[in-house]
Length: 292
Length: 315
Image 1 (cartoon, each protein chain N blue to C red):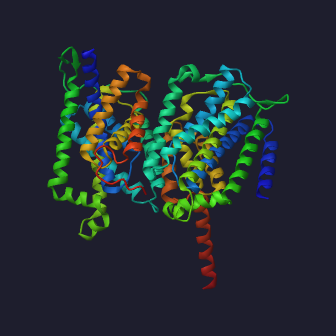
Image 2: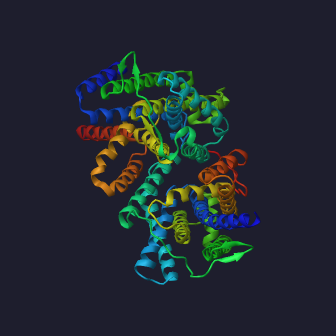
Image 3: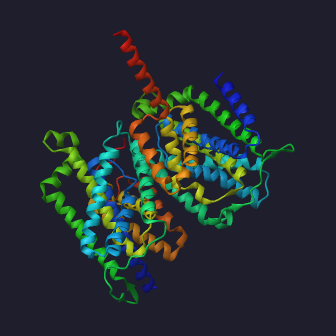
């Protein structure tokens, strides 16, 4: 019993870390632009598939491939902002939702045409044996994921708190007009937020590829779950994204283990509804939930 | 007047399509999607409340009638009111807490509800047939008249569309419709002048759910087979896209949007693998250049063009 519980906990933490990274992407973008990007999951997919190309097919060393993938996907994010978001004449929430959904269908189509329909297996980052802890097995990949997430959260926190650019970005989040009056290039900040958010999506894709395989349609569900995690922790809060990711991951793993595997996808959305009804700002919500 | 004309157009088109099975079926599908879009438009276009889970009500309508007719051998005519009431009651229960939210938060709440219903359709195998779907739903017939064949069913579906259009038109120009538009402009102002905003929103939510369930009923008895894949998040998004692309707050916009998005994949299938790229591209393009939707967008361009020409004449 204990052993099973521990095994589910490991699985939950691994998935939770991935959700957390995707949620970080949502929060970063929402902070700077008040926008929810329904194509975020597709940038995760692009990250995973580009890794397959650069690491496995072109044979680049993993760290180099990692950096190149993140840069490439970040660039795709910038292009997306320039071509599809900046050009909108009437930035209504409903219009922006449809545009990002259109972008997600578009990117999924690109993924299918470029990489084909078949799932591709990706080996784990290191060829180590599973570690046994009290009868439960922990994959080395999980340790990698956990480590990367921790580094990311600390780096992002430092970025927002210590660097001028980071502070400028938070200023945009608090009040765009005031920030622009203080001489902050808000448009440039928006662009950077897009690059950062999609880059984070790519990191999530790279990390999850060895666990689930990489396909063109892996992104949509991951994107929605990451979104649930972001809402759960509090949209716009970095630590909230982390907490939301882990809560969601662990709840899902326990649900699969002790209730039924078919209900796995429902758990995230039940939690989402619950948090919306009880506390729309999320567990660690910072912004008051301005309901426009 | 407009409605008589519309009915005449439907009857003539039906007569002209005699025997052309493919186009009859396509037109029937357009009718079903128009129903869904017009119901959702009441909620989105008039009351300004977004729903990203509307396929759930479509599914509830289809699965209620499917389960009653397949498992209990009910007559479809007996299951029709059940399907509508079921959707209405669920919409009431779900809408009560959800409609307190607004903007993105309401979108997310309805999205969550839609996903949960989808999992339920897929996993409640004893009732819904699970991922393989529910087979053997009977076709409709009335007093010995077989309604399953192409043209008859086309008339049934478009008859329902016409009826719904009529009801919506009446609703929009009534006290309720004015209250909804007031909520759209400003919920606070509406409640300040005495509109019970919570009640009005809930009413229109239930109404649009019942219309969606009617569409689900018609769909189930047309295809005679339903599976969870029809009622996904993507289907909900497609419905929203129909409303937005057609033009919000316009009954005819819903018709245009439904027609456009139903015909689009038919014509895109020649592009095979590129279908998704083009579909996504068109969706983005319309929203970027005509955020008011096709109806208003085309009219705006026309008016601008006319104003320009007038200007040159006067010079």
